[in-house]
Amino acid sequence: MKAALLIDIGSTFTKACAIDLLEEEILATAYTPSTTTTDISEGIERAIYMVNSAVGKKIDYHIRLASSSAAGGLRLVVVGLVPELTVKAGKLSAYGAGAKVIASYSYKLTKSAMLEIEKLNPDILLFVGGTDGGNEEIILWNAEKISQLKIDAPTIYGGNKTVAEEVRDILLKKRKDIFLAENVLSKLGELNTSSVQDMIRKIFIDRIIISKGIDKVRRYIDEDIIPTPLAVFNAIKLLSDGTEQVQGLGEIMAIDIGGATTDIYSSASGDPTIDGTTLKDLPMPYHMRTVEGDLGLRVNAISTLNEAILNKIKRSKKIDKIDLIPIVEKLSKNIAIKPQTDFDKIVDMEIAGYAIKIAITRHVGHIKTQFTPVGKMNIQYGKDLQKIKALICVGGIFSNSNAGNIVAMLNESICNRHDPFSLSPEQPKYYVDNHYILYGMGQLSKIYPDISLKILKNTLEILN
Amino acid sequence: MGRRKKETIVTGVIGADCHIIGNRVLQIALTDAGYNVVGLGILVSQEEFILAAIETNASAILVSSLYGMGEIDCQGLREKCIESGLNNITLYVGGNLGLGKKNWSDNEETMLKHGFDRAFPPETMPEDVIKALDQDLLAN
Image 1 (cartoon, each protein chain N blue to C red):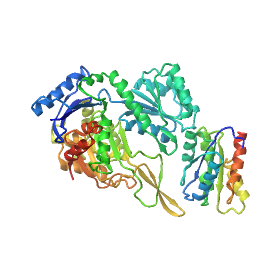
Image 2: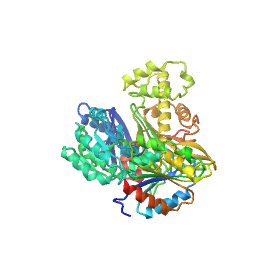
Image 3: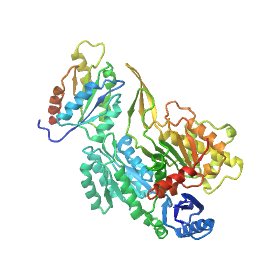
Image 4: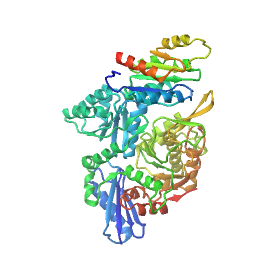
């Protein structure tokens, strides 16, 4: 047997999965509570032991890989210039590298913004702003301010290249770690995320996993550890693009809903599908990820409910007379709580519906209608994802619930056309990652893309 | 021409106007004349012009309008520029700028009152705009 071992260390659970590379199938999967607060190795060893026991023998793994979202994941702050331009370009770049943007700042950094950044103490500071040859004044101002910050996080500079060396010198003078990347927006309308993303990945591997104590995992694996969201993102890209040997699913979207965040992925051009439409705004990446740090089923259950009330999202009939606030407050304090009764499950499903609806609305583009002397014109901001054929669903809520309830919730929160100007999917097929294999196939996709894709296509369950 | 460095110019067609051809011709001519041109296309709002000018450190914003509503669309642009920190940016407007006014000089006067540095009538040749820009930007 030629087998692969795939490990994921999350904040709550450490998962492991064994794959038979010759038969191209899953041998076993297991998950156990993470031991990040004591010794991370304990959880990993337990997960490996559980997988080996499930297979029934000790396996000599051909390759062992891992991803991690433990210790808060990859926490990043963006400092940029104009919110709609370089700040947005910086955020999109960071999301695509598997990071969580915990705050972003535009224009000149103020004293209170600096105090806030120091309090947040991010893992990486992404510093952008100015097209090439563009604004220098605010960039150099911000460089001075960043050099004065009392934080140890390295800075990646991906702004106006004309002042890149000056920025580096300002930070080096104050003994700050600075890495220069290509400009995320060298020209308006030309988004360049890859250089900054490569830098984020490198810093994650070389420094962050060490500072978070995750480097102990190196003993158990053969390649570099990557952030979990990046592993999931790699799986989505593979599933969409396919390989030379195995056909992909084409343009797709994915939802990954957890306790603290809701991630939305799209692999699609997002070109207009409505006649007479002109595109505005930053061009969006084909493979795009957004993270909603205020939407989740546990830690952020309250902010999800508040956001739903603010957006006037209609309650489902099953619980429209019940006061959800005390229930949700309890959930946000007991983050490891699992739904026990049918009522618990209904509440979880309701909150999930809100989170998904809001997160999808923020990810997809929208249309603004303009009446002109030559007739009605549509202006499209962001991606048109109406014709997406497949939506991949990841998260405990999907694997532990009845298929009929999931389909009803998704239909209501995604396809129901409450907002005629939103460009969300109209009639996608829902695929559920019941076996938690997306992270694993994302890890494996760099080495065995064909095998990963075949397993993904065979394992994801279609609900509708 | 005597310009000290490659200056950036932001341009586009303002408001609900889709007439891009004249603006495109101008963009080509400006690029050939050595300017770094940021073209925002059609249906451009005042805010879009301003944000693009901030990010690219533009020296001038050139607004095109053909459909007759240009005067209304341009009102308040100078004030918003000042509010956004673009205190000294050069503002030009050109095209068919207002319905109902017979004389170009009336139109021009109105646009200068709105804070534009220059206004250009229909059928202006690109070289006239370039000449004016060279002169004004050097003076700044």
